Image 1 (cartoon, helix red, strand yellow):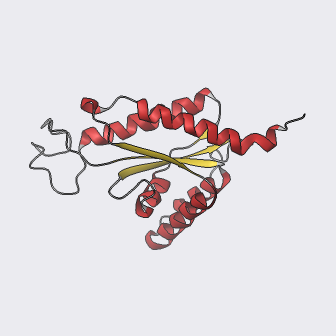
Image 2 (image 1 turned 180 degrees about the vertical axis):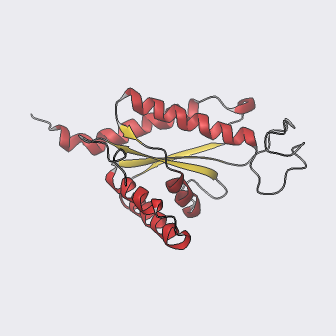
Image 3 (image 1 turned 90 degrees about the vertical axis):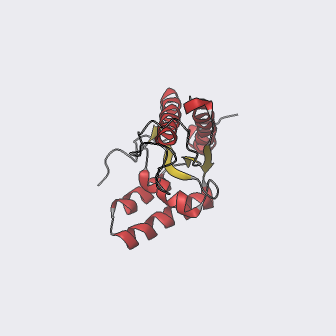
Length: 174
């Protein structure tokens, strides 16, 4: 039997993305509280994500959302990582308020933000282990958040498209 690498790319990208999910899940969390949400989208769900990115570009005038939607389409799948909101009660002031109780509605807990960043970094590190191409997209995360792809109330979402190809679609971006 001959198994051509080109025929395996989608399956392999999904397998690596699932390993990236594990890396995101096991990344250290502030106070050990795990409120990270993560998933992988491909196929019709990835197309829906790309279309939402284009809709945001139309509404906002931010043209890079269109470019990034093309990156999502060029990838075999896209990882999503976000967080639920939970003030950690440290009164650290990193969010800009002296105490957690004085924080204005909608202002994210800084510890939650750091947790998302560490989870994204861990996921990208795992992708690097397999030498697949990735790019962290704020734009894709915002679209995923609007679509509630990680569930209602999940915020600070980032998208990480995963590509296996001879040249990274995320490198020479216009």
